[in-house]
Length: 246
Image (cartoon, rainbow, N blue to C red):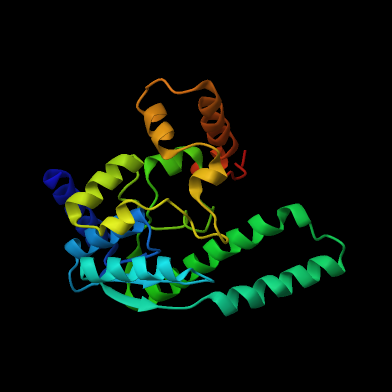
């Protein structure tokens, strides 16, 4: 694990040098993946790394976990509360949709949740422009394969250091890096709405996704869910389609 961490840290340093920038920043949610990334980027740039907490109707427990990430990693930090900006934006959008009879009740929760993710990423890029930092993503291979990320939200980043690691491998890396036990053992959540958890929303577990990606046998029901998610989210992983001149 020491070798892997050292290689990631060196890779992070090389990406910043290549870009001609000063350092790295990450959105810190209080979850496992962002905690691991916070520890990694602080090792790569002790004085030029930033953990950004972006509460948006966020539970106190998750804010406590996010603060534990900051304390344990030693990363510089800033907090920007997006609750009011999100409410103002989504209320305005919803009002226009309702006036045009285009409001879709079934799409409401997901649309509002995706706006959360995109508003957070817009905030990270606004900060990165001032600091001259790269925005670091937190997606692991399990999330990437299933498309469990918001396009132009948490998927809209500059670099992805964890993309070849399963959820379990990220957890093991977190243990090695000293991530707080409360975070290592919590249920993964993208904080998209009250009570939301990744596994409830997906209909399967990260353990089963990890096993599937390793070529191990899993129940047919879970296999179908994973393969359907992968197929349905292909557009998130591929380059943007564009017209080719003849």
